[in-house]
Length: 379
Image 1: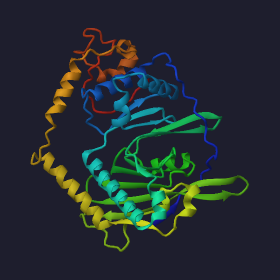
Image 2 (image 1 turned 120 degrees about the vertical axis):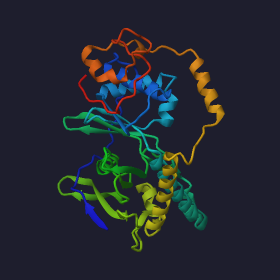
Image 3 (image 1 turned 180 degrees about the horizontal axis):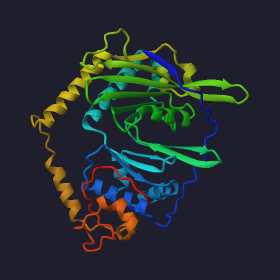
Image 4 (image 1 turned 90 degrees about the vertical axis):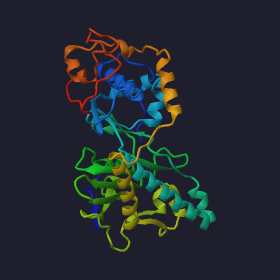
C-alpha cells in the first residue's frame, strides 16, 4: 500500500458567492448546440457511442445554458435526474458522460454495502445512530464548486460524481465515489484534487476505482484532505492519498489482511461534528468481496452482450414514449438558431438533413446524427 501526500495547495476559507445570471443572454452557437443535443438525448434520438462528448462552452455561456434549461419544460427534470455532466471553466469545456452499465452496477453494489454497514453501526450504538441517520446516499446529483482564480476572476467546476454521501443540511458531500477505465479520459487524481481543494476540505474522502480495460487488474485509491499551517500564510489544505491493488492482471484478489476499501466513520461526518465520533470506528469491504461483486457484474454484462440475458422494458414504457411523440412540442429559440459556416464545422455531426428544416443546413434540425462522441473545433 502506498501512502503519498501531494504538494501543498492553498485554499481560501471563504467561499465565493454566486454571480450566476437569472436572465438569458443572447443565444450563442455553443449554447444552442448543447441544448439541441440534450433534447435529442432526452428523447433517445441520439445514442452516445463513446463515454464522453466534449463541447466548447465559456463560463458566461454555461450560466446562460442553465438559465435556459430551467425554463425548458422538456429537459429540466431529465437533466436533474438522469444527466451525467461536467463543466470546467479553466478549460471552457462541457462534457456529457455515459456511465457504463457495469460501472453503474458495481457502484450501486458498493453504495448499498456502505449504507448496510452504517446501518449496522446505527443499531449497535444509539448515540452514534443520531449522526448516522443524517448520512444520505444521494446518488450522482451534481454540485457546482465556485472559486476565485488569479486576478480575482470567477471560476467554476461542476461534476456529477458516480456516487456520493451527504450529511443532512450540508452543501458538499463528505464521501464521493468515482469509477474509471484505464486507459481512459477520466482522471481520478485530478477529480479528487478538485473535489477536496475547491470544497476547502469539506469533501473528506474520494474513493476511486480504476479498472484496466485490457486485463483484470483493479486498483483502489482513497484521497483525503491534509490540513496544516503554512508558515507566514496560515491554514492550508493539501491532498493525501493511499493506493492499493485490489485485483491483479490474472483476476486474483489481493490476499493481504486488511486490504480493500476501508472508510472511517469520521469520513462521513462534517468537520465540526468529528469530536462526537470515535476516530477508530471504520467499515471495511475486503478485496475478496470487492472482486466477488465486480466479477458477478462482469459476468452479467458478458451474458447480456452474448444475448444470453435479454432485458425487455415494460410495455408501459413504450406507451409513454409513443404518447410523448404525439404531443405538440413547444418551439424554443435554439430551434431557429442559424449557425455560421464556421460554427457548422463544429456542429455538423449533430445536424440531420432529414430534420425540421430540410434544405437549409444553416438551421439546426432537432434530430441529431449519430456521431463518434467527441467534438473539437472553434466557435
